[in-house]
Length: 414
Image (cartoon, rainbow, N blue to C red; front, side, top):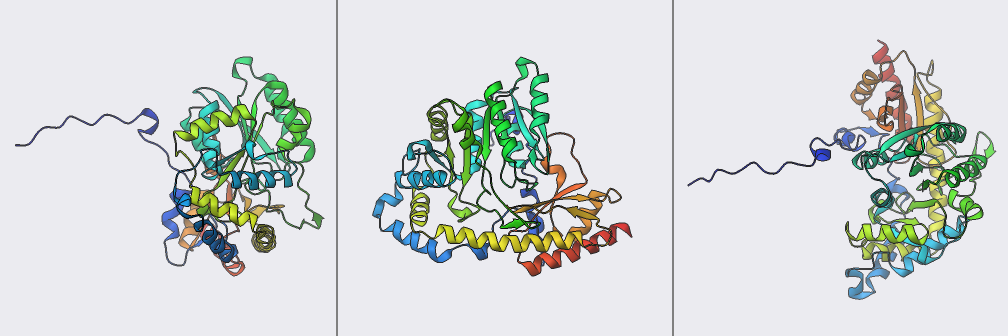
């Protein structure tokens, strides 16, 4: 006898027809034979310190069964101290108690959104913006307001004018920024603008999420000028705000400098914010993998981290120059880009005579893939833009990718 089943309960409105990550939706292209990817922001596997990490894994397993048990939600004490030392090395006042270990820095931002943003709340985002940030804010039903960028990062003059014009009821709760080698533009926010941004946060009472996964990946020089990374926004705020009232929540990660597979990120925040994010994390995953934390702590304590980062800087600078110089040397410059001072990305402008979708399709046919710029806008996009990552492919692959892009341009123009 067959029982007639009632229809299953409906999904929530937000997940009835959810939009996935526009970058991860490109993954099917990557499995095609011979495809060169300039799409995902993956660090180079050739730069992973596999030997040092293997030693760290061995050391972690000498801890016995404790490496396999649950851990504190805030993170293991030895890793929190090692990350606090990283913060101090970057000019911030920090102790282990200020650190919350997260499963990647993306989880740290998600926790922040959970404890701050209610439907309809205004959140400011520099644009173009990291798509996962926009995805998290859309799911939180935030009112996303764009702040324009230029070659020096977020335009604080435009932000000041917007804040002055906004009705009090629409003032923002949160602003998201990647001041160091932003994703996707690769810009470095100037010291003057960092001070101005913190002063605006203090004046108008909003929080700043300072996402810094790329800050260690600065290059030696750009266009012959030495690259100097200004003080973090949190460090600036520590000089301007009263103790315990710092509006800047600092987020970072070991994914770009050590290994993404560890999934170790961290949040540096004053007690009131950290305590609430800790409670939110308890409902998500209880704790970040203690085994991964032990490996990360052992690696940071081994003294190998600085050398690993230095090798990455040198190699990424080589790869960046191969991409930038190759693109800018194409006849007629159909794809133009500036030289980033660090990070993993190049943001490019497509000649207005080229149809962006046709160019993307032609590039895929030539076995090279990038991320179309429309993915990085919360509203009306500049479709004649694109993001390329130079981190994962080797220099010969990058040079081949540029030639394939040139062929794609010819195909579209033909």
